[in-house]
Image (tube, rainbow, N blue to C red; front, side, top):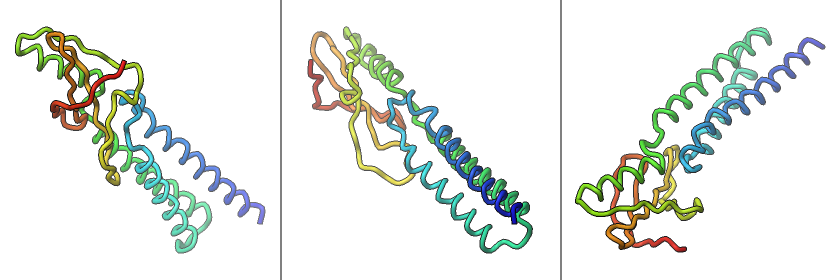
Length: 172
């Protein structure tokens, strides 16, 4: 009886550890992209998949408790590895600074005097699109420039690097 209780506690501790480690794995690159990554969908879906596996293994798998824990261990590693690989291979192609450099190079290519204005506040740098489940981000960057003394704004898609003029203006 005591052995079964220890195994149950071990399973709960393992699931908590996997949940915390999983959150950390998805959160690592988020700061580099101004916090625009959709980590909640990836984290919640992977945790739900692990939980569903744990319930399935616990209730429907035959074998000793140790064998069940080993099944859960392998299943959780496979599930989180799959989601983490998909997440990291789907990261946006551009950070805000890289986007600003690309837009600046585009404007300089026409022989104009260009100065990039980087806003202090995160809200001024971002625009929100429509959210989609398991899409890495639904945000766009706003890049503010002074081109030959005139303010110019571009809306930049960090996923594919496409950008276009925008009507938004930087408030001082």
